[in-house]
Length: 194
Image 1 (cartoon, rainbow, N blue to C red):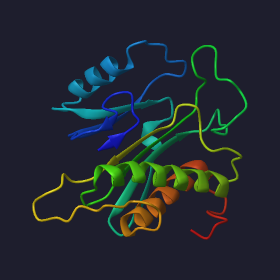
Image 2: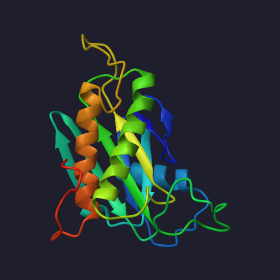
Image 3: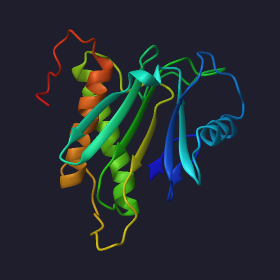
């Protein structure tokens, strides 16, 4: 897996992913330890990835495309552009998190895993724009992409950009899930035709 999460971030073999719901205004200063304790309580064993959000995790959205899948929780209370002229926040970040868990059924090289994070992020931004949000995300978004460990006769994919076979599938799965999570149910689903 590759992840930007507070617990299990980076590139490593991981056994599980936890997307934990926390209260608005979460103030604990030990989020990795807190997530590890929640995972143990849930019965998770070994190393894993832990993300957190104030969004209702029961309201996740799912997207799939030819074997690639994405699960998304979206709290869109505070949105913004990545290159905002603001210097940052002086205090705890405001509420608002889009957590994305993507997976593909083929092994990815380390470079392809990193490329997959970029692909997931591009698809997220496209979906947010398609949903009418004037933003690239929220201040605390997290991503995790999971793929099988190389070996066992499976060819490791060297690419996961949006024009590679598996990157394109992952992008479409993420786009569908983010769009579903970001749009009120009665609105049209996409301006980009995806």
